[in-house]
Length: 219
Image (tube, rainbow, N blue to C red; front, side):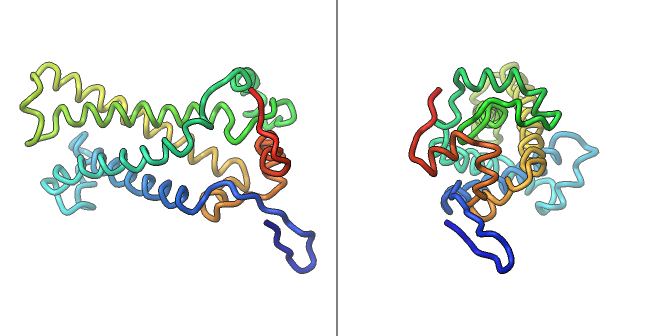
């Protein structure tokens, strides 16, 4: 895919995400913010004002678990779309050993990576594990449907794990968003579905080779 801007060189674009994947991503993202804000409203009295976004406290208590379940269902679709590309291998461990160079902006010292680097993969698995824990523990104290099936002590433990998992998820999302903004040209992948040839060569050279020459990267 190429475009030609008057007075400029021809720019080549590479498809990174299909429309269905991007729509699913934004579906999950919107539900994340809704579930996070409604959850914060229920987490502590000082944050209860967030309940005004959902029609008050009672409606917030009703909506929060349903929003969470929908978010997890959306992520499950995304998970089975990209999980193979997020498996961690030897090359990723090498990338992590050079992570300090990445933070310093010294990309030339980083090992070549495929579609996702090790940092992106770790964030993906943090999403997966935290959402699984949120789903399981959420059912354990979901009133009035399931909470009465779980002993009080186990229910209290579930609330603790649910809270810790929510913190991990929120921090992972912050890292995900920051990285997307920090690496210029990345957000285009999820807004338009494509990235420039230069961006792909610079940030994901093995994936670039696979897309342009048909040679899949080796681990």
